[in-house]
Image 1: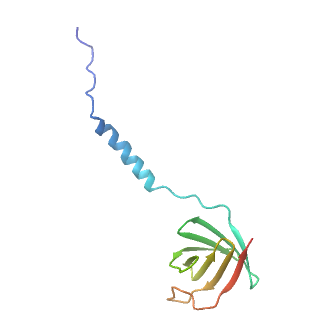
Image 2 (image 1 turned 90 degrees about the vertical axis):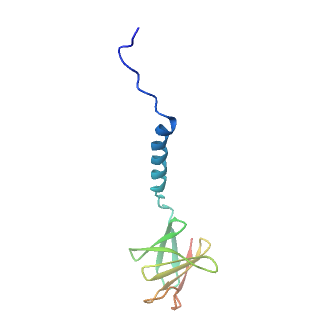
Image 3 (image 1 turned 45 degrees about the vertical axis):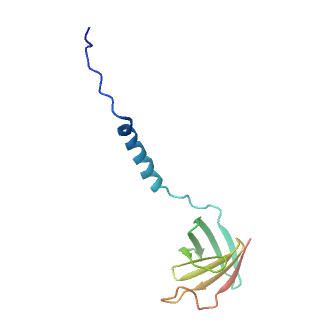
Length: 119
């Protein structure tokens, strides 16, 4: 007895699995880390307040006087140093930091900067 239809030929397992694996890899590469909502507010010796958040291990975002400053991780002998937007933010732990302006062409601030303490 003949069947009224022919079953579809079976695809090799590799053919069915490959698109799923490719999609998983593509989505993993597009994964964005959610920003850290627990920003730390620092009081600086010059009277300013700096709100710092760390969306991932390579970036910091500072909010100073209502203005957002995105920074990226830079080489430091001690602590974590972030630079960008003409600023240097150097932290030691989560409660001590130093804010300094970066002059044009500088990668390490030559200005003395100001100490900031988080709470």
